[in-house]
Image 1 (cartoon, helix red, strand yellow):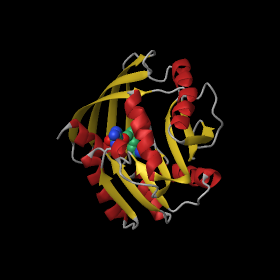
Image 2: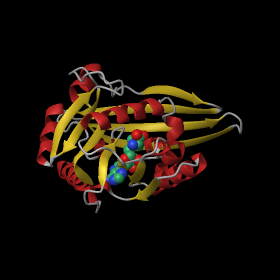
Image 3: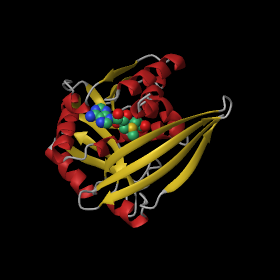
Image 4: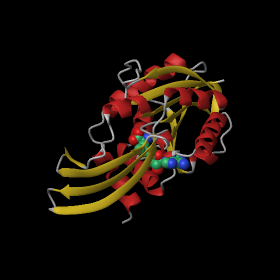
Length: 257
Ligand SMILES: C[S@@+](CC[C@H](N)C(=O)[O-])C[C@H]1O[C@@H](n2cnc3c(N)ncnc32)[C@H](O)[C@@H]1O
């Protein structure tokens, strides 16, 4: 199994600490706060295993999840089948090359998706592609990292660290080392995962390399305006706390103009 496949297969275990229902409560609040066209069809970009797509469909939205990773899409499809939800579809696609024309009321890119676009040209391609897919007055919401908070809190530690997460009979052991390039605003990670199945008594190992762009709010506002969006609201988390320079994470809500 490739590391990309293992990441998709174990994704929900690796992030089992997340409170998805609460995240989706937040999304519903910002949809109604910023949309001028109501909300019916949602595009979940970089949907991963469909964490938000499935929950939104359960709440009555029609959702399309797209992800570059075929394995993520397979896991998402299987999850929606197992949950018995309808109105949710998954498509393997590169989000910079979508061919939708004003078909969605909401586009969302949650949990650092836009940080995968470390090159300016790619980021602009992505935003233009998402803007095309969105109806005028519709909402774009995304979650990523805030440079000032990341640097001041030293979020991506440069000394190696180890952490353990347990979910049911599964353990995920994470050994990570990060290097932050402050000029490029990119955090480079080398992560080693050990997945222990306590019932079967087996262990799976895989490595995960990540390059994540960390943003200043000002540059995000600039690229949003350049690509046809107007900022609507900014928060530091899913609890709707206001964004400050000390916030290491940020959620920005913008409207298509
Ligand atoms: C950290 S995961 C986030 C998954 C999910 N949104 C969540 O909240 O857990 C980032 C996802 O973005 C996807 N991705 C990266 N580049 C992409 C691209 N060009 N087009 C579509 N998806 C992409 C990755 O495959 C990965 O599944």
